[in-house]
Amino acid sequence: MNKTWLFFGVGVVALLVVIAAFALRPTTPTAPAPTVEDELQSEPAGLGQAPLTEVSPTPAASLVTFGTPKKSAHFESSTPAHGTTLPAPPINVVLDFNFDLAPQSFIAIERNGGDNGNARDALERDYGMDLTTIDANKLSMRRKMDPSAPDGLYTVTYQACWPDGSCHDGHFQFAINRTKASAALDLRGQSAVTVNLKDIAFAPPVIRIRQGTRVTWRNDDSVEHYVNTDAHPSHTYFLAQNSRALKNGDTYAVTFSTPGAYPYHCSAHADTMRGLILVE
Ligand SMILES: [Cu+2]
Image (cartoon, rainbow, N blue to C red):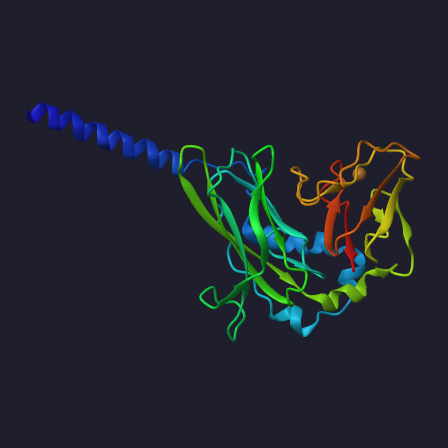
């Protein structure tokens, strides 16, 4: 009996040594893990591109302070991304996972109320419309958003369930600030507009159009580009906006009939080649 306990004790100590060695192992200096702060800094800058960052910060924008997201197991991405400020409400909130979703999954899109506008215990009503739906491939779920949702900070709370019956909850935040729409190129007087893919960028990157406008992208570069709805690489936010590979001279067109913000990117240059369409 004593021997058994001795072996058990030695085993526990050995296990602790292994765990400590793993925790204290030297990390490679080449690839630092991305932090939440990195995401927060990169997302709004990438979304805004040049025209939006040229405007001076508005009081409404400076009041928005994003909290720390909580990501459930198997979470991959969301649109809007955590920490993003959009100049118009998103048409829907989409969450992407790397595991099949089960029907009990749901999304709530609540506006933060209260004096500081950031307290999770002071959420207003849910601005999600209709019920949460799971896409055919079961890897994404989405919920439409009320296009009349007021400016402010929104907390998305979700429950993601798996076929085995287990569920995990998570949350993240984005903001709506319509004053930023004035920085977009206003093309609301036209029923058809063209966006050029030139010098590894969308030109113009941020446009404002009328409901029902047809947008045509044309590749003026020698390298191949794509037009893909966010997020990368799930491309799920607005499924109708995903092109094939566009060679020099190729075009791709989409008619936008639902008002809202449409963040998109080129999947071959996802970090830098980003665009935004505001449909009114
Ligand atoms: Cu590209």
